[in-house]
Amino acid sequence: MPQLKDVEARIAELRKQEPVAAKAYTDAAAAFEASDADPTDSSSPQFKALDEAGKAVDKLKSDIASATQVFATLKGGQLTPGSDPTQGDPLEKQRGDDILGRRVQALKNASLGLRILEGDTYKGLRESGLLTGEAQFGAKELGKAYDRDEVKALISLGSQTGGYANLVTPDRLPLVDLVPNRPRRMIDLISKGTTDSKSIEYPVVVARGMAAGYVPDPTTAAAIGSGDPAVTPTQAGLKPETSLTFDLRTATVRTLATWIPVHRNMMEDAPFLQSMIDAYLRDELDQRIESDIATGSGSGEIFRGILNTSGIGSQAIGSDSIIDAAHKAMTLIRLQYEEPTAFAIHPSTWETIRLLRDEAGGAAGTGAYLFGPPSQAGDATLWGKPVIPTTAIPVGTVLAGDFSKAMLWLRTGMRVLASDSHADYFTRNLVAILAEIRAAFGVIKPLAFAKAS
Image (cartoon, rainbow, N blue to C red; front, side, top):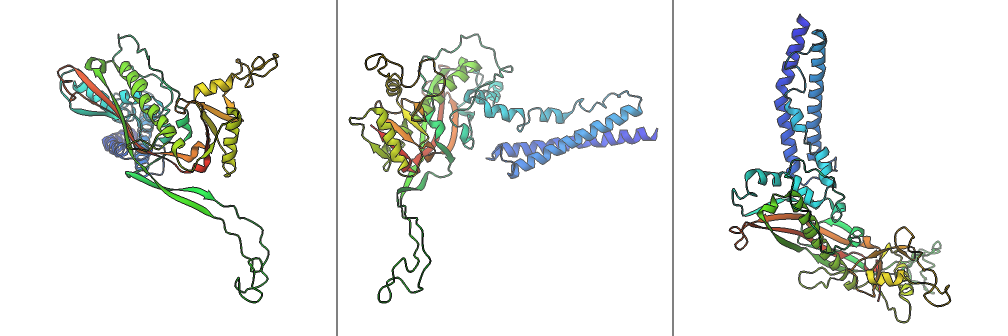
């Protein structure tokens, strides 16, 4: 049957194109992963190249499926061996782990530790025997916990969703975390960016003048001050000039790091490794960053925090209640034509505020709670603004501000390294796991912050 032979020839020709399409897709995927391209930026050249390669793969698969269906119809509905478009299909295997598909989405939503565990580098280390004592390694990068371009997810990386089917199921008891971890809420509110330099120079407005006004039409074309009597600015139609006072400041990129020793056998226990990285290394870096963006001294390698930045407003509590002083701090910000987005308060100070009661019971502190009953659900608020309870703020101090006017620039994302080359770790089957991040911090608009203390 001529038609049947034509279709067979068509299928054979399409099959010959499979390796070419698979290699093109593999090359495009490798180039994409090796680049710094944002996975969500569809306009980048790397994304477009990978997308085109993927479209070519999809079209080839569709053509094969269509030709095979025609072949089956001509054969009376029976597929011949080898004609199944998915049988031995190298494209299906290649695209099963598509970085623009489930894998990228899972990694973007996963926790830091899960990203390491599901990364190709960690799996490669397991397969090579480096984690089981079959080979020695010096310092190996386990993979990026999160890329610096994922700035919105820098601190809070979302909830983990399992996915350990291909890893060792542990017999060890679950990790019991005895270290108190403070909520990282203030960091969520500040702005994030990136830098490719060792320092960032940025201008800040330290004073402003408001001179806008209505201007009458000029009554003369003569220069101001000319003539007799002299021409006035009003007669000349001079428009008022607004003044801005700038201060050029510099934020230096700092390296923040911490490490923890772990037995090599524990490296085989994937859930334990994930818990250790998430609960200790990441959390410790996050806590230190939050502390420094609030109260950092700016000396040595330490960030200069918001409370130590010149130009922010300052309200003495004095004889006021801390609630009244917090409102006055908010007013200082509003007088600079800014609007605070939240209050950051030490948990102990917030407890004092939250437990305040009226005098409905016949004496002070015996009536109803001023901030609602204990059963009241919802976020904590003060003067209509969200409250961030954080130990990064000193007891007795309230920080009000538009936290988007503080900036954390990332030089690198957080990365995790492992090495047995520390001290005598190799002979003791110990591994040092280190997490570090390089970043700079600055307050780009001090007028948007004020403290009450």
